[in-house]
Length: 546
Image (cartoon, rainbow, N blue to C red; front, side):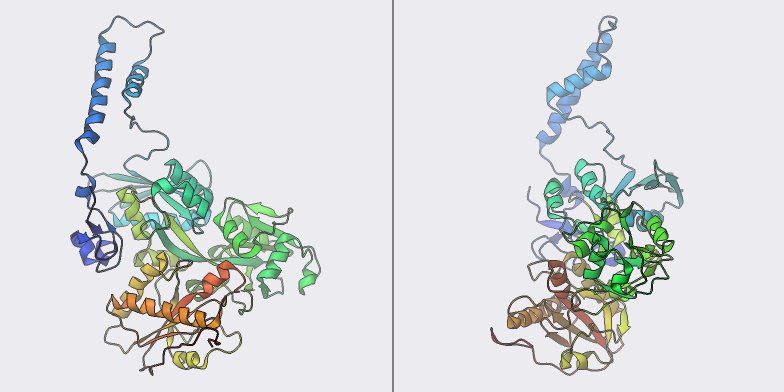
């Protein structure tokens, strides 16, 4: 039966319609809640509707199994070579064509949520989120159990009110295992420190589109930090220089102005999402030097670098520990160190997103945990664990990184204003906000609502990459800012300035797909003072966009 209505999947305290469970038309808002913009899901009553045949076939199968068992129990004394009860039952079930639903090693018990994947997510962030989730659900007694190795553990929560128990299983063997486990039915939530790849989308197609808004959750932000020994005098490196060091092309520190000595390379293992991100953003198709020391654990890698004066390595931002982090430059953009603001805006060259992935028909408790992970409460937990949360707080006067000359109008508008720690970005190839930006819109709205009664003027400033005609790029940057303004308008927010500046102020190189994606963005600014209106930028094709 085709469903025409659904209920909001947001947390009850975040949305009135989610709290009431009020059905909404799936067509009216393109499958999104009219109040908060969250995904709509068919109500439980609709999901339970099924044709009589769906129940009749399993019932017939059970009757056949019962008859077989009755026959076996009442026949003559068993011959030693006769099949067992289980074997006889299995044979009858197989003959009936009904699939047995007995528990198997890859099927979770009803009181278990299984999280498999990224070591970066699973080492500290996922356990912290899981513990807070258990407390939120009333499981006040929580015990952590060790697993077969350091990358496996479980949190067991017990609810004192009724004695109910909930087990959250964690297996953190690398991002690639997240999608393998989801495909095999061995996990309910996949943990990833990079976005799902095209081939993984194909392999998991039976679970629905895992890149869709209701399946892909950005739970925090992180920066891949390039680290060296604290005594190393270097302060910054370009991505090209980092590539040369990790490929072995540069084998002595003196080639980059450091003290003479052979370079020792430390890197994460092949299953790590941190390695995937580094390989994608830095190495590209250049192979890692064969003599590199490989680690499954980021903390062990960082400690090894901090103990070796000749070392260079990379880790997630929270794992820099005693090692020294370097500023990184991408193309013509200024070198930036990984910091809370540069990672939150994703301006830092090696910033990345951390993810939960769930199937379209995920178990209710698994989806509830994923929804909790993107809440403001969970973002504060991510912050406390050393990651970067997604609450878009404002920083005074932090504008685009000046490379050459910034547009004079941009400089005038942003002088004395505050930039929110968020950039709104788009899905590749289209003018549709990506899944993170869709949730950021609600976060921006909550921030502005908390400041009601205070003078505040919203500015949306769009940018593009530098590929193609400058005038077309200018037009695209304006259109992206206008698209954000329209979406924020549905939340009741009106922007005082909506403007585009084309390829000005790049935060990354325009020579790579990932760099171009980061340059396509909309900055969000607020000002306490009234802002002078601006004339929407425009030009004719073939004319310099400016």
